[in-house]
Length: 283
Image (cartoon, rainbow, N blue to C red):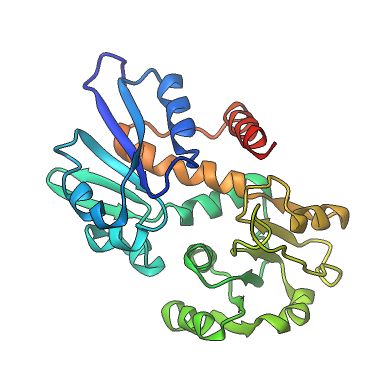
């Protein structure tokens, strides 16, 4: 796509939205590929979200990312694909003619990050353990089920929420109480933290990883801090780790392609750029 092509704009909608790294990521790609485009932040209170989304085209946008607390509303206001319906939330909107469509790119972000960071992670994999049962966990379970993982233990403090995932995704999901986590690790090929525990400003996540097999992969959806206590403990044991920043970068790829017609690459240069921004804001 040449820089002289028709101007296109996309945005991230949130309340608050200042923390979003999406403008940094997409602006990097816009510059790299020489596009006549712009990606902006839009701070939109929840009560104004519907009006804003219905007026995307009038505001000059071809699409948008959606952050908390608007992801469920975004799905309801658009023609959602199977991923968004299964996850129960949409984080990416795009205009297809006059039709507003949506998807959930956290699914692709999680699985492509695993592929890139822990090649062969699912070779012979039978069992995964997912901590959490919220929106991120639903995206993770969807991704793992797409890769035909037979047994996905969903561990959550509120068992009813884990049971809801079994009802949605079927018999591959085994709902488990949080206090039973330790007994599951001996047979796990992948352990995923899909909660906010361990994030800056949130309670810590303490898990004894001694029972995990030496071949196991430990993934964390949290990216602030870059190295969570869970990942540090896994590295101490010599286990392969997959951090949340990679998921953030990979989930941005499909939206950029939908809006601007170019499939971007997640490069070491981009990762270094976002890492530096995170570290500046954590200092």
